[in-house]
Amino acid sequence: MELYDCTKINSKSFNLYYYTSLAKTRLLDGKEATTNKIAFNWVIEQGPKVRWIPEARWVEDGKYFTASGVSAGIDMSLGLIEQIFDKKTSRQIANYAEYEWQEDKTWDPFAKSAGLVK
Image (tube, rainbow, N blue to C red; front, top):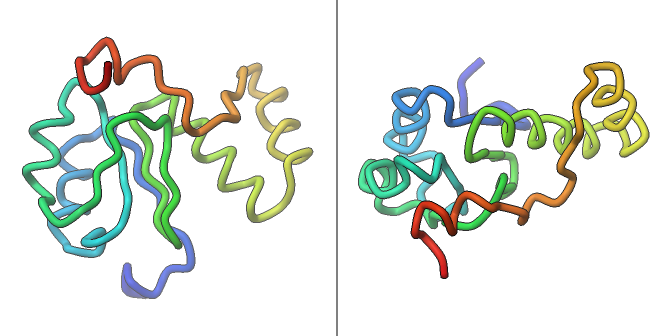
């Protein structure tokens, strides 16, 4: 199976080299995406045709899901599970993992501290 044949593709920025590789494939060209806020400016240089969103916990654009860090990646994964199944299932999984799910994908306190937004 080729990457472009997948129905859903998610990427968490805990491995910035993988993340920039995804941007360099040009699969994200014209798509909205986000990444780790500390390395944001470096990462956006790797995919100049991506519509990078500086203030987002995670971003969904079609089949592409991108997150801004490790915990945001967990939140994004639970959001993806919600889309495939339902919110109840996502909340059950978060509860089983003893994880407090940040359900709001726009909630991003780190964008401001990284100087990306005012």
